[in-house]
Image 1 (cartoon, helix red, strand yellow):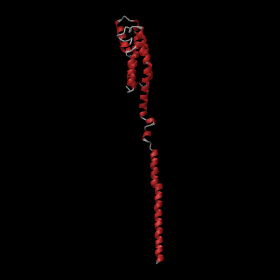
Image 2 (cartoon, rainbow, N blue to C red):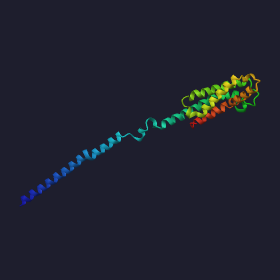
Image 3 (tube, rainbow, N blue to C red):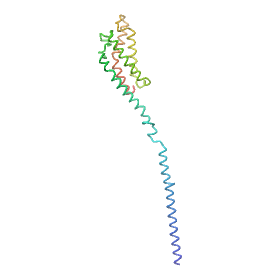
Image 4 (cartoon, helix red, strand yellow):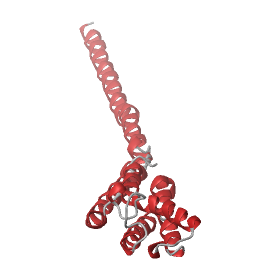
Length: 196
């Protein structure tokens, strides 16, 4: 009887060991293939899926062109402001310009020289903004107007003090644009920072 009980106990212990070992093995397999596999799959899917930053492309994606435009506008403004002051000091601007309607120099070589220099700055601005006109509409319009006025001033021979009233009237109009040339170019560069 004792042997039978011992035998049953031994069987029970063996069965328990087998069950525990099977459960432990199953758990291990589950860790490797199941839970561990799912964990690996999660890592793989995270690696395979592009991040939000990566989907935007290099350097922040859609932000990059905007930053490029701002940097370009700032550089253009800085460069324009660096190149104009000496000429503006020499010739003046607004009512202080020799091309102003109130100036006695409107029909002299002094205004012709100011017109030529202002035209050079306008040409420089147009060269720099070529292909980017949409972002610099104000600067482009101002520079083109200056160029037309400088050409008109020269065509009419305004510096030689024409006697014809209509020519003189046209010289006054051209001179007004040229007198405002430096401030208008500066304002256009400033508005370029806002893409206008």
